[in-house]
Image 1 (cartoon, rainbow, N blue to C red):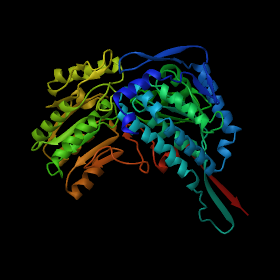
Image 2 (image 1 turned 120 degrees about the horizontal axis):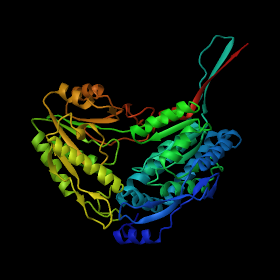
Image 3 (image 1 turned 90 degrees about the vertical axis):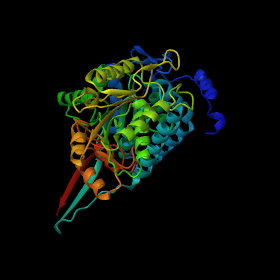
Image 4 (image 1 turned 30 degrees about the vertical axis):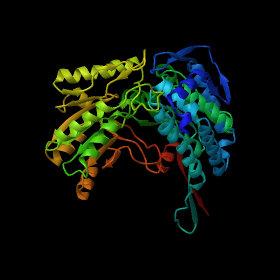
Length: 498
């Protein structure tokens, strides 16, 4: 984007002119449903962005039946894989064409800086649809070796209707992680975004239909979890349910599957990721700067946020001082200002929850080094200071519970064994990091850590070719990479004897 189109004033004018999509997208058409609605407010300034159609059981039922018809009788699962791939590439091109509008929607409804919405969120969504679009026709069935009198074929076939339920922190990129492989495999889908961030997903649904996807292949319905999410989880017409969100809600979806048709449920849940800094880290300044960037990126509202910084006691003071300095220097401000580095957290409920954790840390005896208070950046908005605690012990709430906000807990250790024990002392297992210059130590610790992703001398690096998911109560299954297709396909063996 030219610099002249990427200044604060330009984004403010775009926001004033913006008219959001507010109706469900079912079978290729807008639908108001029963007429019920809910209000979407921006954490940027608290103002109402839109009144959105609210899905109940009837709307979910219509969306699932539309996806069912598109799968059972429509062309999508029967298209040559290359044709499905071309459709996903056209959708990626449309997302690119509407990138400013989608980024604006994400920033306004979510509170993240516009530079991250445009440059990180939309880049990820576009790249994901392109990656799976290019992959669609490159998957091959196999013919295992058999006796001369028989032929065996092993084929992967699309599972059917996929229900995708995604959270508010990355509404488009996480939706793309579910939808792109599901559609590439030949499935049809019903997407339910968070009630906090439905506007970007409703626009995505319109773009999907404009891209040439047959009606009913991708349906988008807006509604809350207890009603719309529950209805989708219980619906017998859904074959697969893919969810990203809290561990508590993930348990509900497992129960819904048990109480309905035993649909597959794939979960990417919470995290309390450890970031281990050893004294022989290649560059302690880089380790500290990366720790500060990663934990405050996206306002700390990330399941992979390295919210537990585990530092060797011999370098702890130096590392913590650097992290505190970086936290104090962060530019917290209007999400629509491209210079903003940390925007608004996702509304008043999130402000109260994060400040509750801050109070719990102080009451437990942790030392508050910086932050811990609300900020007034845009009147009516939900802004918090980047917060750092040290002298944290493993039994404290801030060391055990997922805060999902800009709060870092620093713990110290003296041996590698102690570091691994601290890192694994959690119900979660989504991500971890190790900073060391010794290759043997890197291999040894990365194997010992019970996490789905381990970064060495970096954080939040990777690409679409590598899988993403967690151990333990961080969930099951994997997003991204070829492995994601396993969630949306069935393995069939055909044995022919003569």
